[in-house]
Length: 298
Length: 199
Image (tube, rainbow over all chains, first blue to last red):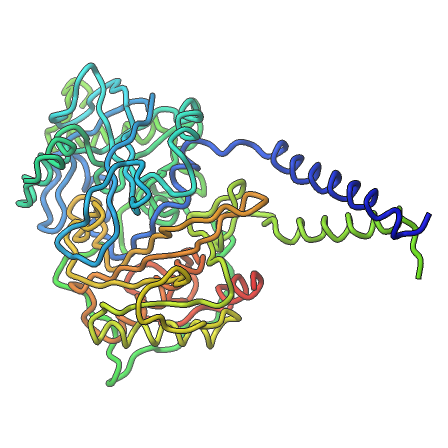
């Protein structure tokens, strides 16, 4: 038999082996966790941090002028995820157009995490807190679907969450929501404050901060961030001169390099703290601000 | 020339396997988005020739965007396909600027998130490729004019957001991909190796 005559057989075999290889790669890969799906592939926002420590987010913490502390710190578990609000793209600066959640026009989608509130540790929850539950708005990445997120919600675990009702927050900031449709939404959801969701995916596992950049989480939680990018690189070349002046900060206060992580002066670990340890730290900070819900814990 | 069918099968399977091994990151890194080895950021651009549009940018910002795209072309194996006068179906990067307040539901001045946003990038047309790798057919880059005060920050931010749009994540190295008030306006050799390794 010549190669030409064997070609269909060969191609069939190759296709079968290749398909099997791809299928094997998928079948052998672990299903990404809920937070991995939610965290990765979202939009990327860049800028300057406006606070230095988790103590600055705790309800009752002083207003820096640029950043206001959370309305509440809760301990709870994510039990479901629902569609929230979606925005289209355009070139306006006054605001983006709201579109149906499943619209093809939607460029940015915010889902609502349904959180069973186990305990309000500090501050108070606002509108939208009903039946022991709140809804927290989070961006839904374009790389995952609500159905996939629902399927993996069992891996979401429990966490400590800094939140504020969105409508009340906007009112506090002097930017009240006036559009009736958006107002109804804003009243129904809480927004994460300071990207402050700290989650334990399984009992005793290190805390993850799914809304934060890894280095930022390490700074706030007091451990050393280890990345494969932490390799030596030549020293920087000055990138500014008289014609091209160096960046000068805006008038907005920014976080300094000498931050005060919760870990204190101890040598930094490469492992995030446990949820229990973080909770103790945060409750102590709430006690110091006089906003702890249970004063007997202070 | 003749070749045994079995040898041919092995040759093709070996080639396929080698291709798979090369395409699958061994560990998470800061370039591209593979569903089973996800990184913080971002789907890589879906083709080597990058077309862009910034027709509504203010004059200072379009100068910075021009710089950023020229730098991308100069520093990496990606090629600037051209500037589209209007954003069409094959436009890969579309850039906007404004004094944003709550555009896309984001908190641009940071009073809730704690991050005063200077720029943001979102892949608005994600493509899922075979093998679980996502690529980006269209990314939107937005610059907050309230923060674009100097040539340096405009160029740095343009370089940074363009980097996200093609798949680069944040880094600790001396690079425009570093977060915060860095003044570096170019990519590091590490960034370049990520990009050039893919193209």
